[in-house]
Length: 161
Image 1 (cartoon, rainbow, N blue to C red):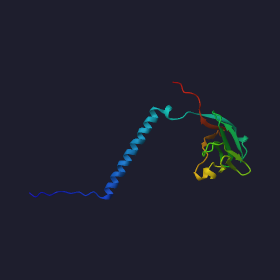
Image 2: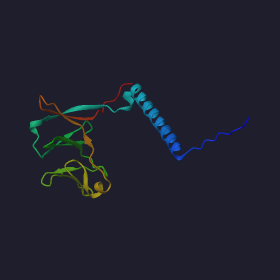
Image 3: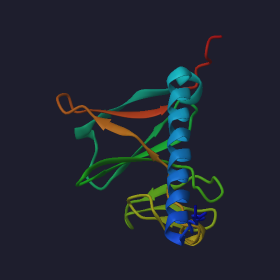
Image 4: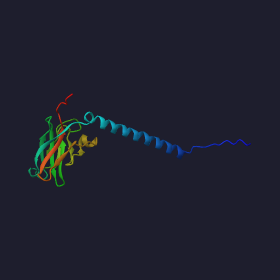
């Protein structure tokens, strides 16, 4: 009887396919684990938020910005554009200075380092533009039936043990 040895060579394609399958398996188990933790511990992983009344929609002038305050006293800038309302935290992402709206130039301006943001909150000049930074968006919602505007901010109440 003849003794034949069977050899199998692993091609580069087989190796890459095996690595890709292993990576996909690891990623999918990781996502499943994170989702399981969020299901079991939702209060600890998600920050509490609160909806605040921010006026009536007809009280917002097109192209203008109104200032509101969150529960910690930080300014929230709400702008009415033709597409609807957008809201931003007034804290400059560069060094934390206060940004204000310049209506005549239709831009948000940070006086600390002359940072400029376009009406959509994207840095277009100065250090924020160089770092690719934008103003932090704040969720804003308009009740279509009543025209009431709400902003969603972090809740500052202490949790009960």
